[in-house]
Image (cartoon, rainbow, N blue to C red; front, side, top):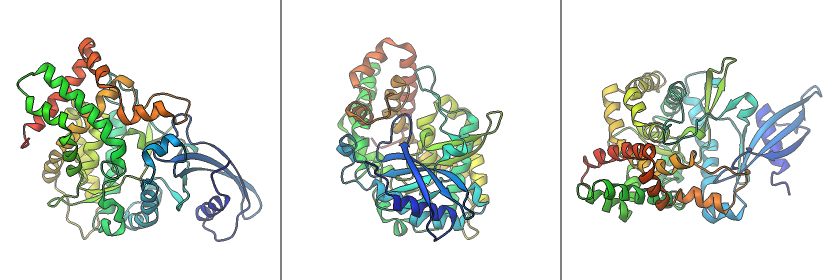
Length: 411
């Protein structure tokens, strides 16, 4: 049974074409992607053929995101507000962001939305304009999923997004963001088991490698109290400037377009159901610690942040004070504990898997859900740590960063 309502396609077409008149059309429905179909949404692709004003046939491709219906997705999303959050973002936030955006509309960094209601969020199909997700499989010998040129573009596009959001009372515009969408509320059902599982592995590594030196940290990670620390770090700042952040910024939520020489020419940000109100450094730390390693960060953080600050300031509303590099570096450091906790608890499982989810036939099933929510079993990661020198080296690099950040706290 086709879950997409023709009336929603009609409305999306009208918005796309800028008309209030009914448009004659036909459409076919296909999978949203060849791989996994989304964790918090039912995602489909609609190929729509319509008649223009002079009777010529034209085609447009759309992505349709709907509330989940499968029992496996409902096992962790039932009663959630993920779909409503994305609807609110496109209906209430995007018009404000577009008004504040100083560059040409074509360079607006977010995917276009043509309709957002309780049944569906209908978006442009970026694959039709030759955009694609780009990432290399992670492993214990390859720790960065993207190269510098892509990461620089991510920083540039985030600067445009963040700067356009400054000066708006977002908790008033988007009341749902007063509860964090990813780490609190219904998002907690997905994130807490996986992060706690990763923390138990890191705690075991600390016990194995440093039986006495870091006992308080291994105990802290084992109790689960650290998760509340993560939640606290996601709250709006009381002393830093907050803006609208993507909230789930990693390589699968950005799509790049290339020229004939395979050089990236543009990038769009997708999946906006987890937006939050934070200092902008939050998104940058989230991205850097999930998608790069320490060597990359040590070599490239400062020039990337300089690029970000320059573009942020050039696109900031005139009524807002400029950001200084010195102040932003301090803000970035304040979120490093969040970044190291995220990397230490989530990346070990990924380094074994090679990706964030297991390969499958594109359908959600119980095994995929279990892998997504829990990651690799602790005993599997510990076993690999003991016998695989390259995996051990990668984990110790993450643990070393985490310990240095924990040493700065009151834990």
